[in-house]
Length: 187
Image (cartoon, rainbow, N blue to C red):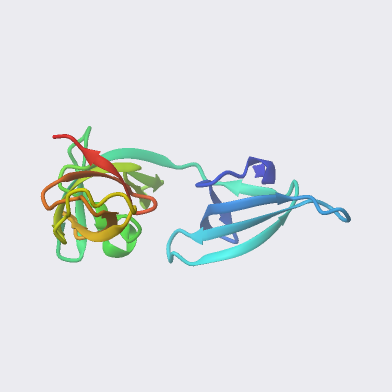
């Protein structure tokens, strides 16, 4: 058993026999009355996000999870196929199970799949990935003073905003949490 002082972003808890992931939390100490913790919880199965308030010190059931590294192999219809890096066993996850991150899947990307027992509950991708630009408007030399941006389509099909000087075929470092351009990568 844990309590609200153990809250951290990404912690998975069991509340009312449902698994929830803490997306955000804030300890609040009002001038009058007891302290409490305001949270945003995401349902692991449905993706529903709810706000919940806990009394400070309230007991919670923390879920122990097992995380293993897998290689993303390919898309098979409506599902994605991954291979365990140690045992070489393959598993398939549906669009629903990977919806938060599947727009960044590139063949042979190492991902971490989190399990609760034998049930996969979350797929984690690297925070930063190097992806190639496959489509964007032509860049203009010297047009960087104003800090303008334009849309660019990456090899995964994801569209992000990039500086005006970026060209088709360039390799970019992308922040996968914010879907944001970081820098050009020298090949």
